[in-house]
Amino acid sequence: MDWEKATTIASAIGGSRLADLRIRLLRSAVSYAGIRAQWQLSSPEERFAMNEDRTRAHDAFIEACDEMGKGMYNENEDASWRGKLGDDRKEIGDFACYLNLILGLAAR
Image 1 (cartoon, rainbow, N blue to C red):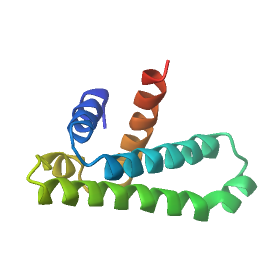
Image 2: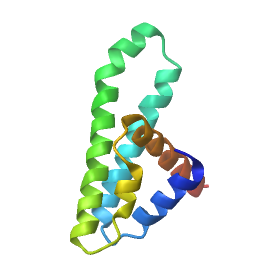
Image 3: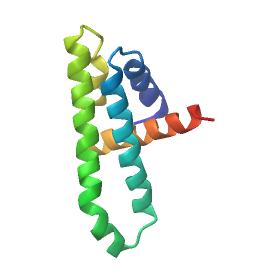
């Protein structure tokens, strides 16, 4: 995942009329990205303790992406971003981190 791909996908999601699904996706991205950042600062023991929560947050973000893509498709919106995002967990996790960055910068 690079910046260009992340911002292209984020723009497609941001253009959707499905505000509730978009907010759910963004909130789950922020939740996962926060845990992932804390992972880098944690000891092996702390990582062991947080591993299940990290996996659940990652799964929730992937599910939110799937639901957003399906919702956009059902509303005849362009959902091609979901195919571009792919199914690689690490790539999807990277996208969550990019969304967290984009939201943080937009809030200044």
